[in-house]
Length: 457
Image (tube, rainbow, N blue to C red; front, top):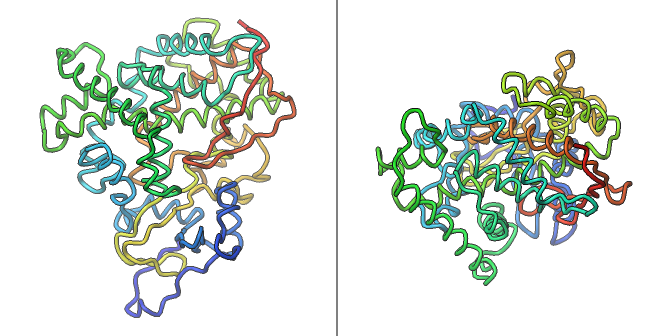
């Protein structure tokens, strides 16, 4: 571990070294092109603690396996907070708090309210129904003989799946509004990649109004309907409303619209980016595609067996995990120093914004031999490269690790399994190399397309 107790002569401790960059713009260009590989390069050259200049602003970074373990530790919980990172998002939507923007006891209370609704347990008994929803959505948007814009198509699929699994709503007509709202609020309020004045843009105002229209409609509907009985299926929003009625101080009425829309804000961009990257990696490696086809043809040609579903497709599971290693959504987590602390022999001051580059180990040969190669067998029982301490953080680390990660694991298998079962696909052009966007979250560019040659089943 690279953290140290705070010495008495704290003022004499060195600040993290500044990464060399261009005049004025600093390291803006390499960081914007590929933040994950940029942080890895900085880690190799400067160690686990460094600063990066972006358009004159200094960004504090801690990186590597020690950073991943630090944010996961009690020491990390004491030294890092998230209020200033995600608090402005809550304020923008008239809420007092969001799960990602609170820490400590309040964070655990809110997390406990949402734990069941975000977990894979909420899908028990629904696997076949969820697969059917997924297939219907895919058949609607992936027409044989067409070139499909993958990220956009996946966004519509995500809305359908979240509607089924979390909220009971599948508001496809709001997809573009949700996408636009997410783009602005993450770029402006969370990552600070754009100036705040952009929140006055007509495009954003229209999209935000539409998203709030959806959220308020959801609140009205769920409050008006009878509470589900003990034997009836409950969704995440049922749990939220029940908690509001039990404890309106924990979940005030004014927070309900943001909490209703929250799953779409959290899931639309992240899941669509991840699934789109998986489409690319599997199609890019024909030998992997052949293995995946063999597995999905067996599993999806008959009624879904929930007991064996996740275990009968190890190649698909490996392809998903390997894609999330090479193309992680959570390249780095932004936090604020709760107090002065030392990491890697360098001083970080209370109130400083800090990027925790937990995905740097994903690209290290010491954890993943030939780390740049796509190898879906890294996670097999005889290798288990990902279980090394601090080595694998696809859903982030620490108290704010993605609340829906276990449910996401199942939905990713359903989505990719159904896609590769149904369609004969090709990259277009066939030698296409994936281009990545970084704002607001890393993922394939919106113009990434695949050719739907026809139906396999």
